[in-house]
Length: 307
Image (cartoon, rainbow, N blue to C red; front, side, top):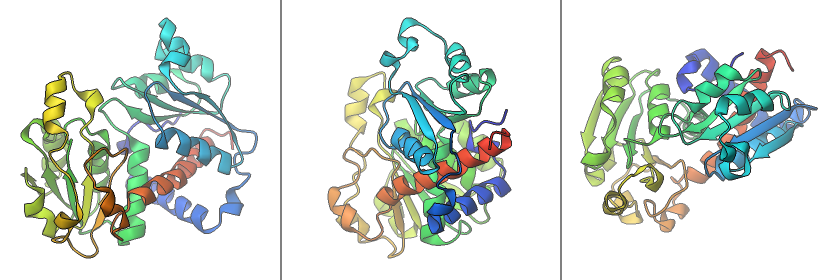
């Protein structure tokens, strides 16, 4: 049974197919209004979420399907000690496809290995978040026209940021892409990502602690939140959380056609004054996420033979 656990599960051709489907949905939504009629999506969210859960649910409704959901671990049998494996075996009897978020790395793979229906990873701890990456890719394609030749700045929490890890894995497939890794020393990109992904593919990258120094070079600036929930030490979180705050003054040095992205939620890392800048694309990302999740649901249900 085909599931979506990591962005690397999908070939470049499949990513392009998903992008094409999403663009077709945008162009002609009525064509897809009954595509998933009588199909059910189960959203199993054992970790807080607003955008991801609601966009999955909106995606299924706009495809003509229905949704059943668990919105927190406390409201599920997980609070009684039920395993992920047992949960998805049961839910497989009630739905046609599952979208699951879980705080533990690897939980989505366990779910996929035990479910009898497709499972979409909606975020597993600090590991990866493939559908956020799909939203990011559609945003970059719509705003920049192509992926090739871009210099992408990743700023903030590069250590625990699952959206950063997934985006790197997606973008290294395209020609002449460069990365600028902007973070405090404590939140640098994990060495395994640098070694196994960037260095293994000979992808050029630079590391810096200064956003201002590299701002003029960037085509894409991807800001991230320092995630309190990933820290064991409150003092470390408080010390690092406001390391980077993007404001209108810092943007004066940026290219006029640079785009600003953020997987949201933001805390302090982007000033609300930036929202009015035409380069701000983070709210567009949330809409693009719905379209890409629609495309992914269609693809997985078709491959499962239920559409």
